[in-house]
Image (tube, rainbow, N blue to C red; front, side):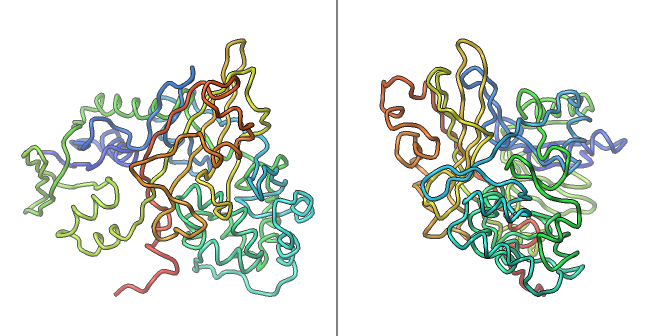
Length: 436
């Protein structure tokens, strides 16, 4: 009899199975994944001569669990911080360098903010009012939506033009629906120290970056990744599970969970029934909600309320001789710009025959946060980088996009995935509703 069955072979399921198989003596672990591969949204493949992540390409360094998992999997020496540099914002029809002193989009240097002109007229003076506006710190046990706090203290321009493109884009939601405790705990800590965000962050010794890159407020790297792509972590975890004598099943999904005395029956699509003392459900929200509908109705309702967003990653490669003269690590695009692109990252390689791959992540906003300023496209027809909406944020001349022209992309690729909105990490919506 299997002691524990883990449902779902994405990174959450892999991490759970790893912990059980490697850290719990005598525990017999079976991991069930419905698709033919492990890793979920994590996948790395060759593109234009490099190994390019098609989904997540890094993780937050301030959360130690991910880096610890990489080290436990034997890849500690392969941990690297992605190259950082100047970050940009596509605002009012052009790329504008982000100012110094940003902490998750919150400006701590109002002079640099005003000089940068990234905000529309009136935006910087309104942000500076945070230094003099009355108010009280957030309560020790209270939480609040990111957007509500930022709008109240620094105005809508900071919330919509700086904070939402970063936190909303990363979490597949909108700052008005994101919990501070989940999405930006260091901002919440500052708001609990002082009524004003600027003084609260400065009191903690947090003044952002000197380059305009988005910072968490810590001296250490913001992000970490594995050299050669995060697929290496998935492969190392799978090898480690086999070494620990865990059972890994792919291509067969769990269709039902049934209580028995003692333990559980886990029914698979193939007709197999596994007995287990415990079950870890680590599959996407909709699937998890369906599995738990009869055994835990309350949890099923919570999971069913989690929204998801369709995302496309478009990768472009340019000849070294014809690539645009980019300076920095990438750019963000606010919703109000009404473009399909939400963010872009740039990579470059040296060498006489090198190319400069460039990846841009663009997505339909989750249903709960879709607005008229958030363009969408049919899920069956994903855009290719050949329109004005794609060309201009990359800083490329129109000729670069004409078929057969010199200096245009030598290769392009578009991949699609669906991600969960982090707005539901602590509640299905903000403000949270009382529960019976």
